[in-house]
Image 1 (cartoon, rainbow, N blue to C red):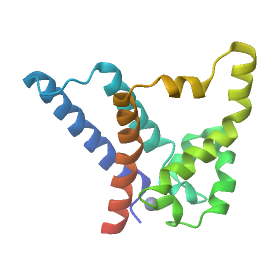
Image 2: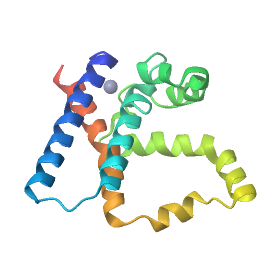
Image 3: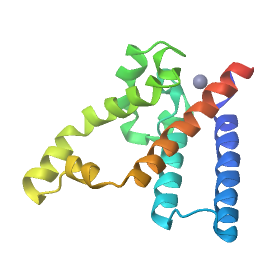
Image 4: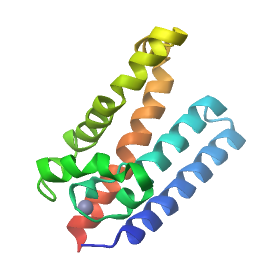
Length: 153
Ligand SMILES: [Zn+2]
């Protein structure tokens, strides 16, 4: 199993390559995506790399350490999912972690909606197709790189 820092190094290298390609595409006038899409992609990509790694199905991993005092949130996840099982599935893996995180965040989301009128569901409904693509790419690209690297060893 490659160490977490190897996964992080590979993911960061790919992020730089993708951002350089986007910059090149902008320079040549081939891309019509805006800064917002790039920032959503990069932010999601970094969050998935450092906080929502597939290896959260382990008792000890870098991603879990990054959660610091909130690392206990992932103990049930590691208990529920055996290592390299569903958490490493090419499609379902990231969804299990996002849904799991949403379950923990439900009280905060409910509080935000009740007291501030902020609705995540409404924000998601307002997102453009391009933002959804940026978000999805930021979620899945680091996951796929992780899974491929796991299989190469
Ligand atoms: Zn792994």
